Amino acid sequence: MDETVLQHSIPAPVPSERTGQVVMDVRTIKKSLPLGREQIDILKGISFQIFSGEFVSIIGPSGSGKSTLLGIIAGLDNPTSGEVLIDGVDIARMTEGRLAEVRNSKIGMVFQAFNLIPTLTAQENVEVPLYVGKHKLSPSARAKELLGLVGLSHRLGHRPTQLSGGEQQRVAIARALATNPAIVIADEPTGNLDAKNGENILNLITDLRTQMGKTFIIATHDQNVAARAERAIHILDGLVESIDTRLERGSE
Ligand code: ADP
Ligand code: MG
Image (cartoon, helix red, strand yellow):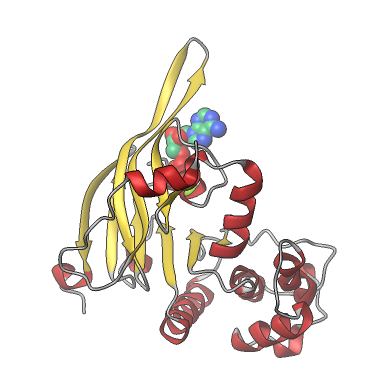
């Protein structure tokens, strides 16, 4: 479908109580997969909006559909139906080439298992996104700058196996920020870390968000992680159960 037509045919959503712009508009996302002769409905019609600069958690028990949802809003997987508008353009219907460009320039992704390239050093891992697509930034200068920001200036030449879990996740966060994307999406980023390192990573994410004004979306099954976000989208059995803010939760 022609993206420009789509862009103009859908009226811009009006945030009621928020001043921020809508950076992501998720509309009735469904995802079904064949299972033998049957099909399983993993996501059953999920809708929400994310505003610029927000820190949002997607919370739900294991198996509720968080990773499937994150894969779709990050453009790594296709929904069966529904739309994901990023800056007003539907990524669910983009050509693979255009989608790769959007993923590279607008979205940074952090995974539970870090997903660093084992044969590359910390610095080289952070440089990778800058060698994909067109970027004005110098990969080595940018990687050093970001590794400094996450407290790893002394680990530039280390490979993932020579780093602790907490350090690997810091490298992964630096990599996610390399192209200066507007949105960072993290799937259970503290899930493979002990309590102390998990807390450090959350502090880092909170600081980076304040400093850089980026939008962070974090999926978690952990109430303590979700409590750090300004808004929580509760997912249960492939549906949005409720959406609340930190003030409503009374944990400020
Ligand atoms: P969460 O991240 O919240 O734990 P997932 O999105 O990983 O949930 O999975 C949601 C449900 O969909 C689970 O019941 C899971 O078993 C199922 N599921 C996910 N991916 C697949 C797949 N590729 N094939 C079959 N079932 C899947
Ligand atoms: Mg998951």
